Image 1 (cartoon, rainbow, N blue to C red):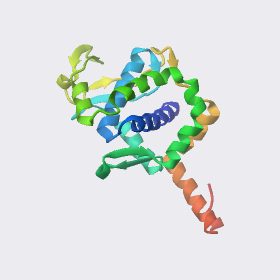
Image 2 (cartoon, rainbow, N blue to C red):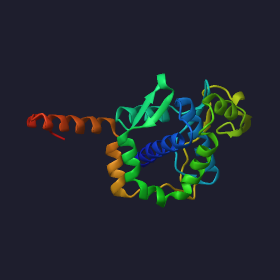
Image 3 (cartoon, one colour):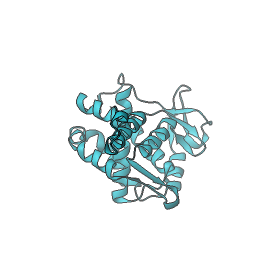
Image 4 (cartoon, rainbow, N blue to C red):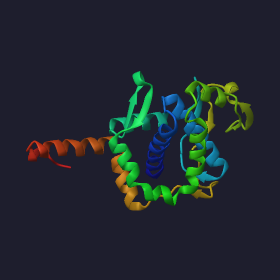
Length: 211
């Protein structure tokens, strides 16, 4: 659902920015584990915010959709990902978007408690240390319905479902107007089209400036 994609992207920006205020969001490994832990805690509280499927992969829980969202946020210039500098951080546009959504965050404060708790615990922790802690966690593995330590779960096994509202009591809500605005903002093709139109208009190429 596009609502899930919008909320996922917005909360990713929030988590990365708040982590950098306290510590350092070094890389994909760290953000993957922090989102996994936040989503797991939210589901335990029957709250739907982050909505990713996580599988047991080479370095523990991994979501391909989360990875793709990070790449798209970087391409849309909301996020910078500098491996050489060991840093993932928001751009001016990314911070501006978060500021514009301040009211939405205030209205969904109950969901941020779980995310803020994970940020407070792990913002200053090295990615490898977070990975090792997650590896030692025990959980009920979906589908096979068996309690296992994560490091012992077979590769490619689904270990955390994208939550369904059937089992949740509340979900992170954004107004319809903001949903429509953010859907465009997070859409890579739409952003590229708007930027091309802007460049064409700025250069006086009005025939090419169509949206």
